[in-house]
Length: 300
Image (cartoon, rainbow, N blue to C red):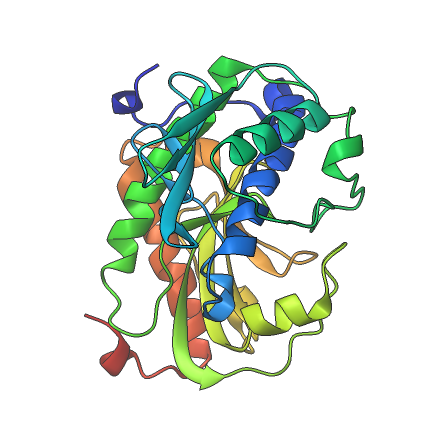
């Protein structure tokens, strides 16, 4: 499969074990970035980003050097590079999280990157420390490549959507805690303190992430046969859930407090990009209009 093929099909049931293993592997690398990078509001210093080969940390400072780490879903390698010119790789292949963690730790040590991290994963119910996790050990290379293709397509549309907003807006980024891609717009006003409640994640983490009013949208490889696009507002304004949203396959998921659009509805559309942009625009307007945002000042 080439990313030029557009919107790859990938049933969640066909790669769930690989997805859950990859989730833990991205947490390993994400926590390394978290430990090394200077704090930025809403934790914007910790996500990963779509690259021409997979997912990357981008440049991270450590001492007088910078390094990056990239999941290469073409060659199926984790590449760790430092500004002194050295590089180490770890094979992406079926192996337990414990083995991936040990190999990654050795690669970091070989590059002089002695970065201490907490090895307990976050935002998951069963938080097995990396060094003890022999449960998650699957890697389907084709599925990982297809998932990256989904992210490439989604990143392209979210970036177009992001460009229409001149107010405060996040990068298009991949959060390894919740294992989803997101872009978030802000009204400019502060929000009520978030109650927290994410599993194995301090409430103060969510308080920082949701410190200001927002409208967020993205893609998660769950919530449907092939994953789902989502959109929500915090705080949710009155009437948000009943606001009209395109396309017809989109619906409000009461238990999750968000709109959902099955990935396959976009993939099989005659105009996937237009269909997804309609969903993003309508759900944003649900938040902005119902929440009385100053749209004239915030939009291009």
